[in-house]
Length: 241
Length: 241
DNA sequence: CGCTGATGGATTGATGAACAATCTTGCCGG
DNA sequence: CCGGCAAGATTGTTCATCAATCCATCAGCG
Image 1 (cartoon, rainbow over the protein chains, first blue to last red):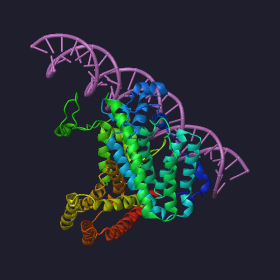
Image 2: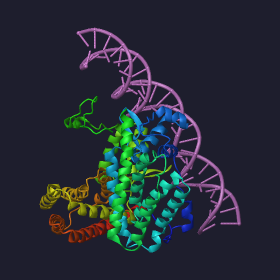
Image 3: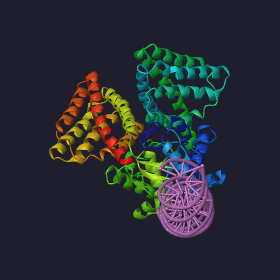
């Protein structure tokens, strides 16, 4: 709890250098959870896939209890849905879920735009970097990096609020959205408009054009929401069949 | 996953009435977690108290594994801090934690004020009810209900955004704040200003005075933040000693 | 005196096996 | 077509056990 770096009299001096050594070791269940998370957000495990404990434990080479814990972790993150005595499955996003997530994103990212007026200009650089990454990914026709750069832009936008809890919250939201994003198989025919939209967002932000920036963001989010909603529709269709 | 109420051909018709029967049964570990949560937010277990697994398991009459799971649940909620191989303790809020939580609250509640302009007027009634509860609690000189009513007001304010995920998020934040709130031992000498502040917030909101309402909320949150920060200071002092 | 390194006790991390409770499925009779 | 019933499978929970790690203590040594 005590922040490192402040050498109170009587304490052993803790240099900021040593903070790098403050490794966050991960338990086995967390490692299993990470592996599973990667397979889910990577699209290897599609929404609706059942995740029996024994199977999972066997394939990952851990005990059933450890596998259980991993499932609980992902359940709390929203990537896995868990039903009492019925087991766990890769979560399915309903259209309402997508709508809710985007309502939250709207709230957080609008606040991020508001914060952009008060932060140091250098703080906006990561946003520019994300756009650059997006552009180069589009040129190389790489789907994964393209989406990742898009996500990174919005992550950095929320990051302007400088709140660890908001960052974690947004990260979990984004994790849920990967359930849809993982189902995208190819780039849109014309990725340029997407890049332009982000570029305009960035320029309106640096230009202090709060109102127009908000309007632009609102529209951008609405488009994105419709996109993912159509994916969510397919998801639930395939799920009930 | 499928929303109740839509009777697709071939499905058993599910009337909204039956949704009440869709009970969310709770596992043993969740019950243990609830019991522990109550003791923590109730102040029975002060921040910093160690929570050994065997002791917990014994006192609750469950196995160690179940107790472990309960601790993990509370850890994810932020009420318990967990260190690898070092065990779990009732979480301690640093001043930075309080600052972060209030930054999030600022973001969410400001958005709530914004939403108040678009929701149905009846949607604001719960806010009024919370103020009334606050007033009657102050009259009866009851500490617990007073704080609870205060919390309820802000919960309802965020509730205006109509987002399940934001509601849950706010609930967890509030859970963390209870770590401080539970340490309050008596009402302030003059609870009237607190009630007046909320009343003014409410009236500015119903009056459509967005700007003044925001200013009022900002000030109100700032006061509250300072209050809790001073408690957090005591917490960390008692913790390091 | 202050620091390094080793020892032992205590607690957690993880495993494997077991049993009860519950869900699902398929079958039967009405 | 519907409801009841038994079998099989999966989960919920407990127990016992071992390895890994942390903590406090203490001896050794410059």
